[in-house]
Amino acid sequence: MIGVISDTHGLVRPEVLEIFKGVDLIIHAGDIGGRAVLETLETIAPVMAVRGNNDRESWSDHIPHSQVIEHGSSLIYVLHELAHLDRDPAVANFSVVIYGHSHRPLIETKKGVLYLNPGSAGPRRFSLPIAIAKLHITQAGLVPEIIELPHK
Image (cartoon, rainbow, N blue to C red; front, top):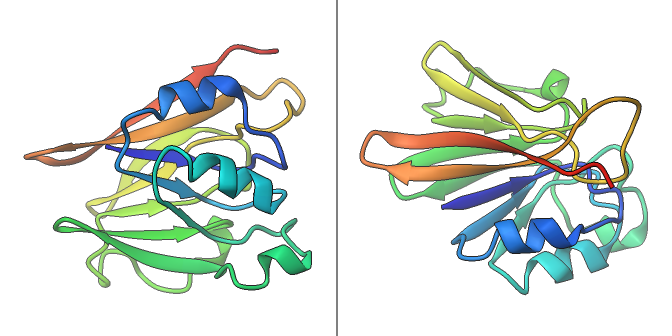
């Protein structure tokens, strides 16, 4: 199972740590907010992260703006802003595109490719939900699940 998180903006909620217990990998889709966020998540599982538009300080210099993750037979493309998608995921044979930025959780399929935005796990903005996601690994492929967290 893969844990998917985005837009933490420096905050790791205790519920996230509990929900992600037992995942094999955590993918952070940007706007991390500080190295401490990644270090906290790394206590649970290896973390693959991309840089968000707010990750501008020197701690984030080594974090790529996008990356391709191979997980089993699946290719996962991760970036922060979907508007910066620089290739056709179907042509590139990606199974999943993971992104953040909008703070709106979303699961949709386009041309056979799963698009997953886990929403924002950071400080609450407006009336948007606080959410994360999981990708369940099944024989049929990666199955997404969005998990809304309590509004605290």
